[in-house]
Image (cartoon, rainbow, N blue to C red):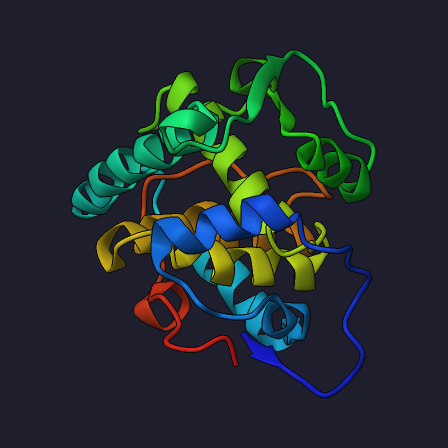
Length: 219
């Protein structure tokens, strides 16, 4: 992970009310302009991909991190869909049987209208060895909103890196290690050629701390 002075990849205006909500939830004051500058070095991405592919499908040592990850994801989801008058963000989340968005812009524009479609875990043919389908769907929803839409970054390698950095601030350090597997690990395995463009087999395992610890600063 690193940021550089080179121009960032395509991004979109952050969704203001979702950015404000994520900052309120996590007490994160990082300005979105810093996330817009995030770049992922391909050498680092390849090393992360290697670590993910080498990890076992099930590692019991990862269970405490995943238990924390599940609890904290549930809290984020309730905040996401909760009624505005009770302190939630009021986003209408629908789980659908087909990939609902052709590109990141379509998803982000939907999020601006406080709605989101999530491709059902049951329809992807890639079950998770720890998360239930419902838990996996909830995670996809909160990551699309708080990781991507809140900072206006897409799904290329740089956008995924920025989304991981942003979303990691909403998790405890323990749960954040599972988040890194679910985002950094899977995405790098896909982007750097291990899966022919498809999502990698899902795992319950932890990446080395150099790749999974929550970053202290954006860059």
